[in-house]
Length: 410
Image (tube, rainbow, N blue to C red; front, side, top):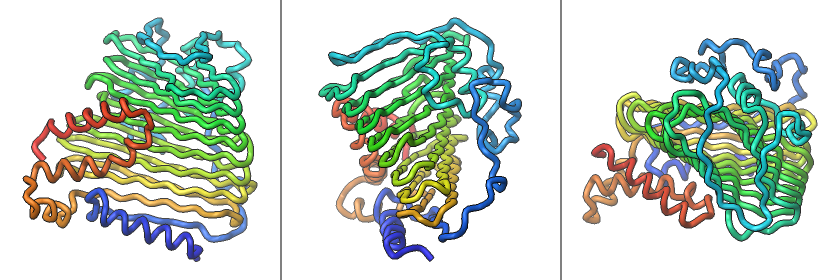
């Protein structure tokens, strides 16, 4: 049986799903694994992790990790042809922050999380090194580090590897912004030093013809706190894989996401949080909206609590709002627990259309139907946008959401 605190949390979530964001017609799934002996190691095959692209099987689209992905639309990346194409970089670096390029054999690259699929391994290999952004230990940054990466429309694949090395006891915000048109395959490695506090914001505002697939590998140090926010609005196909591992007890990872898919767009977010260290915490909240013919989103949230990860506290939530009947959202939360000695664990998923009672309430107060629907969507996304913590960026992204809403008559 779930603990009373966990039951209260699930009850609160059900109430929130009824009262906030206009989602009532979807399904709510919640699962807490009871205290049972750890399963034998051979029950679950270990995930493949390797820097060698040939260590992974050929991608056909039938594999579990690729079955939701339009593989044909990513084939130009999966073919892995070498290329010298580059994105155009523009940076805003506060005092003390260093940006440098390192070669493939640099010792720093031995410390970063290992690629988790063929695409991320290709990105690391083909990039031939990495761009490293370093925040010194104990630095307290008052301004965000901003990296603008812009595609100029080249047809060759751009291979990239970016490393964020955030020193111990530092406090920083890093914003990565992607725009323009490109075929981009990338690995982003985030090293959060012991007792550091870091916010990492990734904004995908690609042109509608862009293709982007990447892996963000995060390692959270002892007593460190990471907040990572993904905002995905543009692109033809965007497939982002994010993994979190802990380097010591006391690590805390909060992952947020916002995505808005229009007609024919495919936006896919996959998470894997590996709790292998005692007394660590994770929270996941991703929200998506969809409108238009063949609009498709995929969210997969995997959390593994290993036998040695006693005292773990984790919860993940995904909610999707369908604005037109032909859109499709896939939501797959997974929770695997190998020890009963945890603080708490659970997950929830909901997908549905507008709440008619909410719309009636707003219209009864003189608000036109179209504006009432837009107000519901803005409210649905508001808590995610507020997590960004950069006011100018929050305002700009709210305007981008408004522009998405204006594309079709709600």
